[in-house]
Image (cartoon, rainbow, N blue to C red; front, side, top):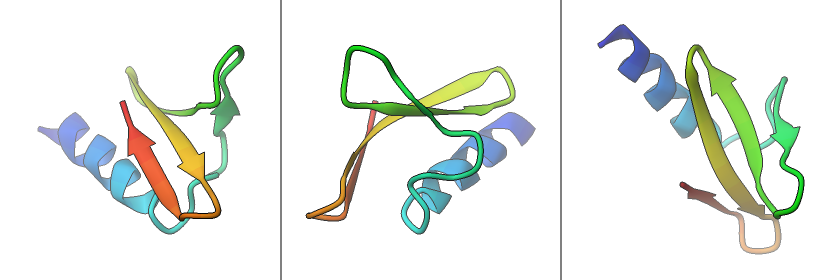
Length: 55
């Protein structure tokens, strides 16, 4: 449950800051990733619309 809460908090924080410390641009696609423990959160950013899409 501890990991779930950390991942959940990181996802919610992307709404305020989609480019947090440690984020990486993925090669070959228009997406980014952040790490939370053993988990990777992969997402896209659309600045003009202010949208974050999670995978």
